[in-house]
Amino acid sequence: MGGLLFIPALASEIFWIGATLSALGTTLAVIVDIDINLAIVVSSCITLTYVLFGGLYSVAYTDVIQLLCVVLGLVVAVPFAWTNPSVGNLHPSETDWIGTIETPDIGIYVESLLLLIFGGIPWQGYFQRVLSTRSPNDARTLSLVGGCLCLLVGTPCILLGIVAKGADWEMAGYPGNFTTPDEVKSILPIVLQYLTPEWVSLLGLGAVSAAIMSSADSGVLSSSTMFAQNIFKNLLFQKASDKAVVRATWCSIVVVTIISTLMAMSVTTLLGMSYLCADFVYVILFPQLLLVVHFEKHCNTYGAFLAFLLGLLLRILGGEPLIGLPAIIQYPYFSDGVQRFPFRTMAVLLSIFLQVTVSKITNWLFIVKKIPRKFDIFNEFPDSSSNSLDMLTMRKDQA
Image (tube, rainbow, N blue to C red; front, top):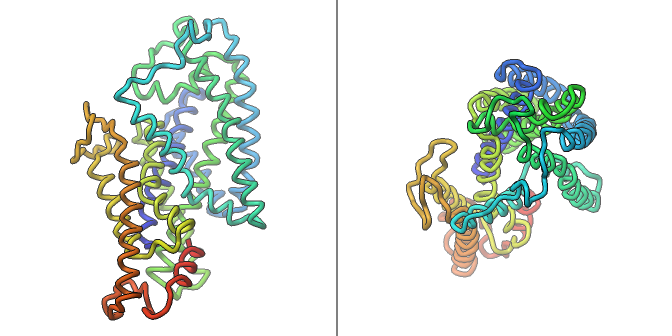
């Protein structure tokens, strides 16, 4: 199962790294006026260098510095942008920056909320930091404080978005009108470029670059270590030495960086890529993590395997416009190529139900009915006469 669960985790990491590198390239292209593809390649090379040679220590230390840059750069930019003469009255009665949600779109917004919340939990980069703490109490504190800081650090970005909504861009000197995907995804660097002084825009550029590099290096390291441990070590070469695993990690770092760079050059919507990277994690990995951690007595490999297949099948059949995947199943309220029915959440609930049901049935068949071990293809019940609680506990520790 580790090899199967690695697939959606790796896909999500690559989507995420590609989106972050594309954001950095867009920022550099707007403010510094260089080619966006060149900016993406240079950023990828920098990330590759210090992740390849520094590992987790370099990622951890640079994250601290980058976080300080993010807070300083964006906080300083807000008052300059807010008081720019090109920005009108930002009261909601004058500038509609809140917007409205149409009734048919309620399901989309609710599911997006659930997707970003629960799809952000089974994240390799997060668990790397949690498992590297000294004690469970430190891990718990890290998680709670980090969640609160996310809200605080995101506030300047929200305020700059409000400013962008209420700005007179013709008066500010911007020639565009935000009708193309490239302009929409460039809104933050455009605000910094046209609504703040030059030194503030350069400081904001450093903040955005720091935030993006922090996300990219974590994604590269986590996806590479997942491959080295779950695929190279556990499946392909079970007797591989530690030195061989390290070399496999190095190779996978290079490969993941190259794939993510190529994807960054082709994406057109950063927000969509952010949703997509959490999409697969929410639909496929979250039910597995939820059950194996909190309900370990009610799950086994048979249930996990079938739940994985069901979640993956329902997600693929639902389609995905961002990657050109057509919708084979058109759920209620489907229109204009958009699934308005929360089919991802439906897939999550069905996966949980199937995993628990199949696990209960197989436990009953092998433990109570004493089915011969030759039918146990996953070697889930090596001793059908004993209780499988110890084995389930071991699987929880592995997860």
